[in-house]
Amino acid sequence: DIQMTQSPSYVSASVGDRVTITCRASQGISSWLAWYQQKPGKAPKLLIYAASSLQSGVPSRFSGSGSGTDFSLTISSLQPEDFATYYCQQANSLPITFGQGTRLDIK
Amino acid sequence: EVQLVESGGGLVQPGRSLRLSCTGSGFTFGDFPMGWFRQAPGKGLEWVSFIRSRGYGGTIEYAASVKGRFLISRHDSISIAYLQMNSLKTEDTAVYYCTRVLEQQYCRGSNCSAPYYYGVDVWGQGTTVTVSS
Image (cartoon, rainbow over all chains, first blue to last red; front, side, top):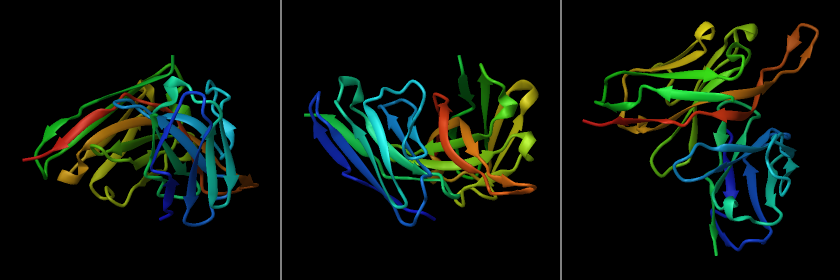
């Protein structure tokens, strides 16, 4: 199975800050990576697929990059509604696996 | 509005069975792969199972942790997917999400790659399954 490791596990930031979350795969996954946002008690929401493609309806302050084993999700200017937990997911091969999550809190 | 609604969760004893249902609306249900994911209390996301559309043979895949115990199926005429969960264990306790899956497959003539399930664009609200004596 492909292991996905996110860092940091927790980040505290302020509205307007630029935040970057990284995700590393245990083996190369080309660009088969997605990012999700999850708020407490809610289902996840797809933000980015194929490493850098923005899902329809997602604000342009979210962007993704990377290929192979190293990926990142950047939020260019944090908004109050962005405080949530973020997960990366590899789609290169089954079983689908997720990172452990990064919790983004308000400073 | 594209929507998925799960039902069927609840409290069940170890070793017993439970069937989850997922009703889709607002899209052509039969055109999409469908999947189930779960999230144990306070934990991260875990993939459970996929079923492809009939147009792609309705191929089924399971996570190792549920293979041989869970059965996924779909009835496209009524836009419902099911997850039959047998021989339940305490570690199956989780919120179960029904999902619409995005897939990509590459073909050269009649030779096609395995599908890439590159994202989950629609999630249900989740249904809670608690396995406890």
